[in-house]
Image 1 (cartoon, rainbow, N blue to C red):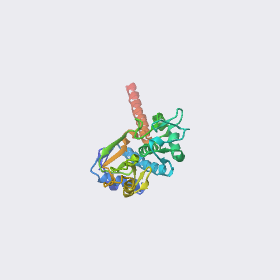
Image 2: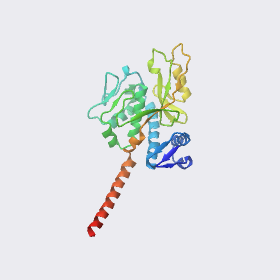
Image 3: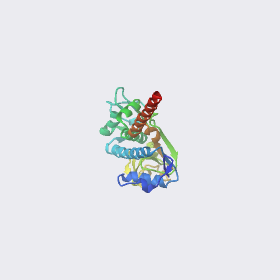
Image 4: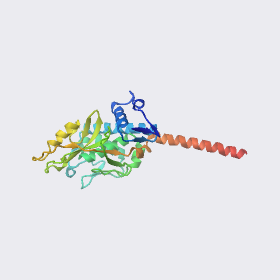
Length: 273
């Protein structure tokens, strides 16, 4: 169910031909799940729809970038923007713009190689970059470090149990009997793209069945248990990120102007008494 402010919302009033098919799917699923999806106001709700669509676009663009799937030991990056750490992480170089460094992964993907969890965090950063002002992004993420699920404190990522999958979520396909010679295929993080498609770095864009089939080909020779989708969802904290959005800043500025105008009038009246 969807609650905006304190009001329960009707799915039919929220879906629109002006929204993408993925955004209408988000609304339909949020409305039909028993979980409560609460939004501070309509601007926050619209921000979440936009942020989730940005995650989907960032996932598709990462696939198109030709960035390679590889292990931490073989990770590589563009040395103009990042230091490659001994642990296979990418640390932002001093004096480099965080937004330019994230964009470079997409523009020069062939210079990069990383595993699937790092790919998910890169996608989240890219989506936030396209959802808030660039100046805000560069201020927030000056200490960028990309490796596995590590992220800046201003990019809160959390995982909950449940099957309330939404476009823009990160899901996990577990491969319990993976080949011990290739432990990096013990599972696959994947972005729900909507329309029954998923992006997993190293596997590509496939249906859930397609990802499971790809993982099953990477099982141990004795394996009898199929790979499967776990009942969990990984998301970024949209309520936290909303405070850095354009609408939030604009509304706060308007509230500040209105409040100060009222105070000024009261002050003037007091002086005339």
